[in-house]
Image (cartoon, rainbow, N blue to C red; front, side, top):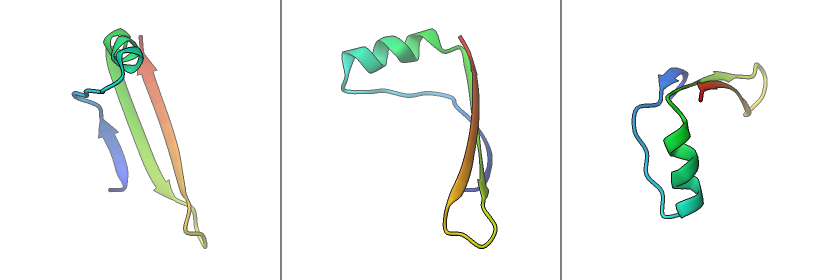
Length: 48
């Protein structure tokens, strides 16, 4: 699941989160492993 992902669709049981999702027009997330660690670096960006 590494690499750059484009956010296409989402849903939520929370009315508040659904309101937030409706304001996002474009979203991406990029996940990269941190060397010598079990952790990941996540970078993201969105256009409201």
